[in-house]
Every structure is written in structure tokens, then in C-alpha cells.
Amino acid sequence: MKIGELFPGVLAENTACVFLARLDPDNPVHWAKSIVGYANGRGGTLFVGVSDSEEASGISIREIDRAKSLIAAVNERHIFPHARISFMIRSADANAEHFVLAANVRHGDSVARYCEGDLSWTANFNGAENDSAAVPADKASGNEITGIKYAHDKWTKYISLCRQYRADLSVPSLKELKNQEIVSKDGHAKSGFVMFSDNYDGDNSLICCRLWKGKKKIGKPITSKRFQGSLARVFIEALAFIERNTRTGWRKTDRGGREEIRSYPERAVRAALVNAIAYRDYALSGTELAVDVYCDRIDIASPGAWLFPMPYDGCPPGSVPHTGRNAVIAACLRTANLMERDGAAFQTMTDCYGDCEERLQPVVMIHAGFMDMQK
Image (cartoon, rainbow, N blue to C red; front, side):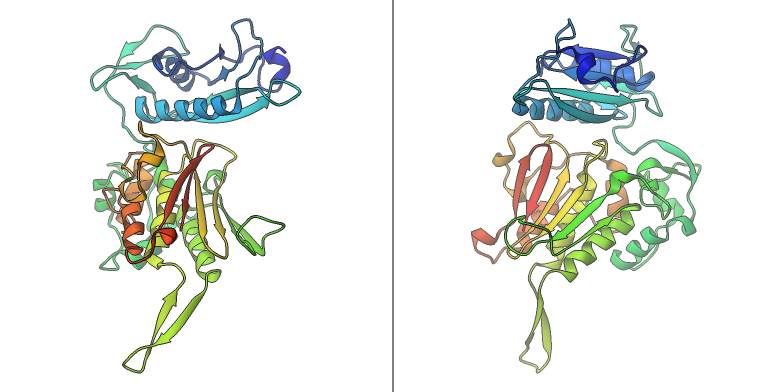
């Protein structure tokens, strides 16, 4: 089958694209420069599982997952500012055994560069070979400076978060936001901070929360809610959903009063949800952060590939390494005192369960481009 038959709505005469039978993990610069070129041009599509003659032979679903993870990892580690990439997958045969991956790269707001090392930075335009030396760009997604001026009355939900969780219940000053590089020197909000504004309406902040009757997703959920918009709002709403739908009891104290007994430590639940928001891959269009509450656990699944060189099962939850995905979003959460600077969310969760037996300890799983935290 020709690729034009498989993606008729994507390919057009003026569509910039490149066809690859496989992604070479040992020589990513060969195809990563095409991504950079599309980001600096009018956009384009990288097809994996297609020959030079445009035959869509396809690759296995396991190879599809590896290709998506590899593209995401190279984009995260070597392309700055990160390219905005969305993925499409279509079957290349009637038996759905082989698939073609289309990585669509959108035009960026600032010049993207590819870094092969600490000193070798190049910018590529329109996929051409006329690279030009450049100074390093900011190593953070969401770091683009927008035309939106910061004003208290446009970030009321974020300010409420700060008042609730900061030790002194204070509101961050404009100077502090500038020092944290959340706002530019002239007072303009960076794109990651705009996602916390009251009027943000992007669909990439979607969180789907569901309560299930038993231990599996069987039938319809007992209740479900979808939260979208400001990251401050969806965090508050998702946390409230978990609170409402997990059992909480009371017990008498020796002094004659009573104390609350929670099914799950509040600090651990909050750390897991904050971590999922901070490290979600917001470039994956059409995905959602999922919170599933069962009778025996909570699953929080965050879209995004595993970015570390070691396999995930080699990292116990308390020692998952810190990485710099979504640095501005992470800075916003740190400023609100919801996130620690060293990325210690997994350690926080395990500490909360320190006195529990092993079967009750938090678990981290990776599958199909999602990080899943179970508690």
C-alpha cells in the first residue's frame, strides 16, 4: 500500500515529509534534523514504517511504541526549544499486524536547535543541510515568552493555590515570578505559566477522573468527571474528586477527641497528582491524564515516554531520577510549594508508606507511552 492511500488527509502536494523504514537510535541526528527543520519551517511529518519508494510496509506495535519513545526522548534531550509533535498510527495491513507511525511536527514560535553535545548547537531550516551555528536555546518546554502580561486578576486560581500551600500563605510577587523565570523581565508570562491562567482553554490539560465499582474497569464507572482548562483548576478539581471518592473515617483519641483516618495519605496523593501534571508530555495531542479510583487502589496515568537510559523496572519508586521536562510548569508548582526542587515526589510517596507492608507500597509502571503510578 502506498503511503498516500494510508494518510490521504495528511499528505498533500505541499506537505513536507520524510519516509523512514526504521528509526536509527544510534544516529538520531539523521532524522532529528528533519524535525528541527519542520519546527523552524512550516511544519511537516516524519513517517516511520515507510520505504523510500513510499510503500507503507509498516512495523510492529512494539516497534511503534519504541519509535514514539525514541522521538520523545530525542526531542526532550537534544532539541531546544522542544518541537511540538503529535502522533498518528494507522494499520498497514488487513490483519492489523503492522502499522505506520506519523509524527507531525508543527511550526514553532521560536528557532529550534539540535544539540549533539554540550557545545555543538545547530539550527536547521526546512530540513535543509545549511545548518548555522547558534547559541544554546532555553532547555525547557513551555519556556516561550508570550504577549500576555502577568496580572493578579488573570491568575486567581493559581494565587489561591499559593495561599493554600505556601508556608506563609503568601502570594508570589512579580519579582519572585521573574526570579523563577516564570515571567519575563518585562512582565510577560511564559507559555507554561499561561496554562495556569484562569482563561486557559487548551485541551492538552484534560484530566479524566473515574470511580470504579471493583478492582477492574468493568462496565461503566460509578461516576466520572472531566476537567479541562487552567492547570490550577484541574489540579484542584482532580484532588477534590479523589477526596470525595476515597473512604475517610474517624477514631477516638486518648484525650477524648477524635482524629481522621484516611484510606490514602493526603500528602502521597497530592505528590502523585502534582508529579503527573509536572511531567506530562503536553505535546501528545488527543491524550488525557487519567485518575482511576478502584476499591483497592488509585491509578494515576500520565501521558509521556520514559526518558531515562535505564529500564523503568530498574528504578524503585523512591529512586526514580529527576528530569527537566516542562521546567516552567514545574517552577510554577514549586513556587506554589506543591513540588520540591529535586523532584522528590516518588520519595515522598514511599516515605508516606514507610510503615506499610510491601504489597501496599506505591508502584510505578510504564506502558504504551504512559507513566502509571499506583497507590
